[in-house]
Length: 291
View 1 (cartoon, helix red, strand yellow):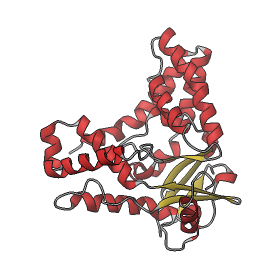
View 2 (cartoon, one colour; view 1 turned 90 degrees about the vertical axis):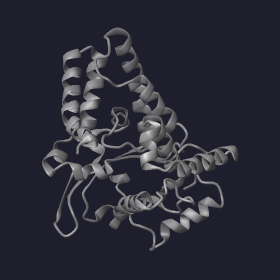
View 3 (cartoon, helix red, strand yellow; view 1 turned 45 degrees about the horizontal axis):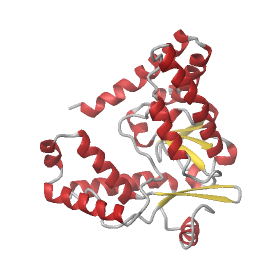
View 4 (cartoon, one colour; view 1 turned 180 degrees about the horizontal axis):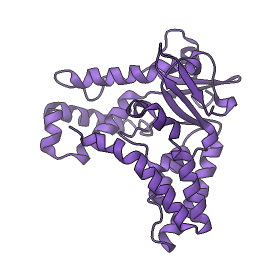
């Protein structure tokens, strides 16, 4: 909370104590419903008119951690990616040109005002980028299986001091989250970078983990408070995988093993870990183009 200037600090402190805010277990669903309602409207609302006043909240001891949703900024950034990845005709089929032009114009006005363009949340669809596994360790995983009313099983608790409290973490939900300190996240990225650069230069790219992707994550982490926390939330991906698959998901550990093997020159082990990652995520990513 101390990272926020006034009056934002006072506003977010009051928000964290509010009983009316979405609890952590409900927040992801609330975000999804809001986005879906905007996109099925006619015409679609690709960017909300106002910035969200909601945030993810986590408590650890006497510390309060707040991660604003920043829905408007993230929608602008996502729409930019969408336009660069799709042809003009395909983009127009989803978003009428008049709506697209308005979104583009408003984003340019936002930029001219000098507003920050760094979101507090990075989002990926249909998979978790390999570079996002690097800042975490296997012991920092919190896995909850099941759904409300059906019971749940919790395994591999995240670090106790980061576990939060109350209904935000104890509610029944299907969730897979990793949590670590900002210091650990930055240290792991910094340690992985020379390994990946050396692999690309000397062994022809044993594992398809690019130095550029790691550098991007490192720069993003470097813009936050050094005492912040970093989370990797599988989000809606948990609904595409059954309980057995989620329990068996060791993507963070496999990435760490692959990097350690690359550093020691154990190419076969590094390749084996990559193949396991590829086999796990290929069918999930294939759903993007499924009919």
